[in-house]
Length: 99
Image (tube, rainbow, N blue to C red):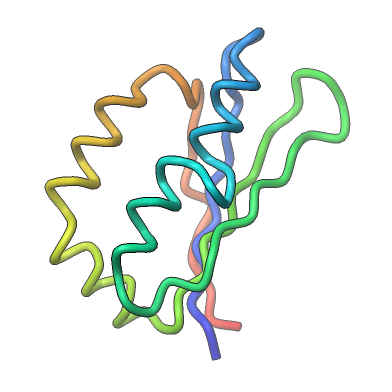
């Protein structure tokens, strides 16, 4: 079983490349996540039409691993979130699931 967290984004027009570089499986978020045990990877899904939404799927071994990451790296998480303010445009947490 794995814990999956899904986010939906609509980056500003013209900022898609910067968004992709920060949010893909090798981006700034993934670099932070990789510091924690139990992180399995991030997948970035681009829109099928111009101006559409992007999705990220973050995979963890378990909810407990994600919670431990948040406990240990919460300050860095909030700092990166502030640093990337505006890069993601509109963002919405879609939900979490166990697969």
